[in-house]
Length: 490
Image (tube, rainbow, N blue to C red):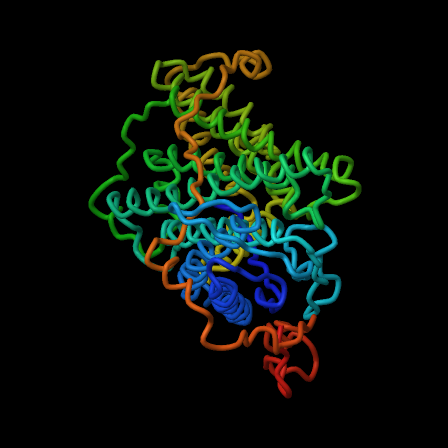
């Protein structure tokens, strides 16, 4: 369900060519060394086929975390700030020129398959901090996707309740860590924009986009609090899983849920998603033409709609538990409107009628199942397809029950939507604490450097991590190989 971010890549950069440190002479060299590891790990991650990138994700996270204390030490030294009681004096010799490849900016859309978007040049260490931290936050989101992936795989037996809760808890922790980083960056970017009037080099690290990504992470973490105890998606997935044998001797367990509480949590997630969508939609006007990709905007809108549809479903479950089946069906009608799913009145279903519409839906479902199996961009619709399946199950059950037993009148759904309460927050955003170097490491860097900075020897190349033939047979004459010949340093 979390958004499938693409990690950025960067050029080589030598701290020793732009900075010197009188108090800790080895600091620039150590910072260059740590940054070089991050650069190589990002390059290796991008060159790895998408379905195998999960194995390299922890390496990227650990290298970025190891680089951050040195980056913040140089940043603190420029403003003569102390770290763990030690004064650090960093002198700027020349303005840095660092290149990063954005992944959310609209100008980063690749028009020709196999060709990478252009990098953007940043001339301030401040934007280096922004790109590195946003890369870490995106990696945390990808780790959340990795933890949730087993819940949606249909090629193996369904996971148990305990495994499901462990996976959701791990994903929630990663999303909250990402939200804390985005919040820190948004506050820092807002201060930079208002205090110094500096315009961001791209939409990826603009104040609006960073604040939107914080809201997005909070929305996804809030929905996971509901998913942890929501039995209906698991029942639907179990019914579609051909490897499930539990149905032979036991009916699926659907325990009673705290429907009203879950509905308000879903409304809170919808509010976060709506805020994120509003920030990104107005980014082009606010940032002088910079804007995010249409796919990201579409995901935010789908997440808002899906969250409101989940809230309608839980209000319907609350009504059905109270014996008001007609009102429950009206809530389903409201939720279907939010999802944009057309209902066939003659059949009473939540799907489109037969013919090309139904054929298209089956094809979409099969394509999404294949994405899940391969571990690619599954969940890019923000859970809209999964929620529509739950609606289909409940509609069939409640309609049959109302037609044969209750026979209650189904009221219009418009007044019900107007009576929706406010959302309720469940997570508290903890402030991000920039990591600092420990005293022994700082003391060791008082010695002069023992070697030269190798990063200064490598020229920056814009053809750093281009992968030709990422998909075998994608172009005539390609064999799925990487670029060969003289290595490009970046």
